Amino acid sequence: MLIDAYPEEEYWQDLLKVTGGLTDEKLARIVIRASSSCRDWMRSHGVHFQPSLSGALHVARTNAFFMGGGKALVNAYFRSAERLGVKVRYNTQVTDIELDEGKFVAAHVGEHEVDGQRFAAERIEARACVLAAGGFESNREWLREAWGQNERGECPSDNFLIRGTRFNTGILLRRMLDLGADVIGDPTQAHMVAIDARAPFYDGGICTRIDCVSLGVVVNRDGERFYDEGEDFWPKRYAIWGRLVAGQPGQQAYSIIDQQAIGRFMPPVFPGTTANTLQDLARLLKLPQEKFVKTVEDYNSACRVGTFDHTALDDCHTQGLTPAKTHWARPLVKPPFYAYPLKPGVTFTYLGLATDETAAVHFNGKASPNLFVAGEMMAGNVLGKGYTAGIGMAIGTAFGRIAGAQAAASVGFGISSANTEPRHATV
Image 1 (cartoon, one colour):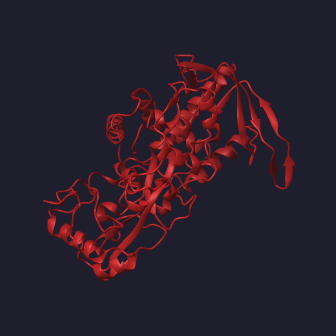
Image 2: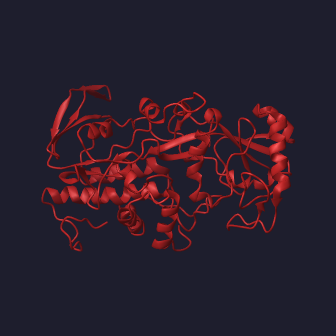
Image 3: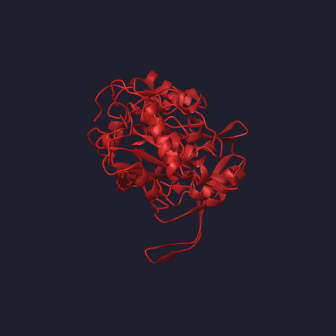
């Protein structure tokens, strides 16, 4: 499943680099440590892991993949919870949260229909609550409000695709902000990946991600390169490309490779556009032919090829080219040529609720005694910007377990005897 160790300090330095220091070290290290010990717990609740994957992500040492992806994961957890006696209400939307001076009182559920049966609105009282309702990435109005217009008069968020569920509209996040919960994060920051522009508007998933960026060049609709495609290993850089594409005209770009790259990355669900000449490729993509061909030829001329090694930060780089390509720079000269259209794909937003090591929601710096938060709703404490592969799952797993243990403890249920601080759960 994992071929070698990924030490805590290396993980921390990777996270520190991609976030530019915009992270809470204490909470980040909780997540990192939890990621090394959570797999047996996950297996005990029906999650099945698969062998290491090959391809451009270089994740055999750092990332464990589970069978069936995210849907299989949550379905396994739902089944396990129901076996333990937890009542799960599907297709039921919580529309409001009722508080009393920072203490949770009740959740309000709107009228809804399940399997053709109508249910009335309901007020559900409880002694504790865990908020895990996601970000606002599926709320087009909120995204527009956050991103506004750019210098070209475009509304960039209108061209964003949503990698996950259509239901993360931020209803409870907005309600908590209105109720005065302490906030963290920039509303424009998100886990945003460059995905295939042909992907569905919602729920395209990981198979729409384009992982060949570091093996070629990326151009915008004007046929120009705009960033170093070989800056670092792909797991540490794939999540910056959504935001980079968001800054381009029309929020569109193209990943260009040649035959040499085939077999070196995980192929996406949609085939690339192919042509035997750069001129024909430009014509098929409706790019300015002369500009596009010059961009690729300038790149080819600038390549200083040493020993190509896509598993290392090799010495294949460009010279005298802006922007430079610092690794894996090989001339694109072997047809056929391939192009994949790119658009920003939002996975989740980083604006969320401030918390601490107990996962408690805070109001004016004071922890709620019985209201806790996990997952995307608090990920901004660890991710001020940027992303590294798997950290979102690690945050959800670590703080989901902490929040659950703290909610249980707040109503008198015991937690791990190994825990030396009664307010702090053991992950």
